[in-house]
Image (cartoon, rainbow over all chains, first blue to last red; front, side, top):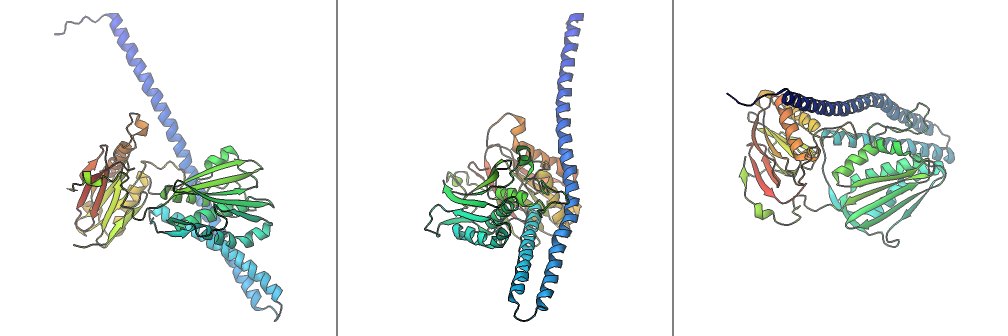
Length: 297
Length: 154
């Protein structure tokens, strides 16, 4: 038998303690429930956006195709010698096809990322040439809005700077940023800078367009998110571009930062570390062999 | 026996009906090697965080997505659920911390165990936790996994 005397005070003390503990766990539970609710809203939102995306994408793909079909038919019936007309229509076809190609690339990239179907194809890339060619491919788009590109390289006279990276992934990331910059620019210019620091490739893309508010800066990397998703929106697109960029950069161990002021413009900066030749040759401290005993499971 | 090799990056999934040697390097990340001893096929995922929070793309960087996808993928190759077995690796705490919110390795291990339990797929071997990274090579034909401890690596 225990010989501890249980007094009223002791009992009250104990009760108090237990109530306190209960209060504490209730508070914790409340906090967790709140977090859960937030995630739930996010998921519901994401699901809603996804179904919106499917109806959206139908337009994005079907409409350009219809234009291409009609325009090319018209070209066939143009009178001989009317080159101006042909050229005009051909440039419209090019523009529609260019957009279509770009959108499809994004959609396939998103599908690959979500399926976990990711590979690294590293090669020695002449980055300045890649950026130059990319900007050139967007020239018909900039002409429509009377925009100009200003490309600032680290070494203005040397196009041969080489960086080890997956060139297709880099191209898609930069295409998305350039495309965005064009969409949200007014008649002005877009400045693209390329430099390196500590084996990291930096590219900044600056526009002088409508800018992004601080609140919106937090959500622009969410998938299917478009800040102006209204039916009258002048800008096309499916809101996948930046979320794809984020995912690819995660894969490449890269970072994207944004600085923006409403009505003054936006600057995106991406930085990507140079890829290793052999992904398995990671050993930073070169001591793999120290632990080099095979265990078999 | 000589088999084609595949290096698995974080956030990716690899599964193939042909025999492969899948290699990956794990720090706080977790990999599940799933194996069907009847069809003699296997696959692997490599996730970095336990749960997708609705932000960004729903990619297999996140445990809840990576585990479901891996099981779906092997089932789509004809495996039946009751034959599947898994081996679990990774989840080291490379950065020492006592704040449970940051113990990513442990949270990654827990989500894997929970979800596999829910899916009723037995875990037949594990090498998880600790402070060292791991390099694993999974033979998808025999189901054998070779492991080496390696220096710090995320």
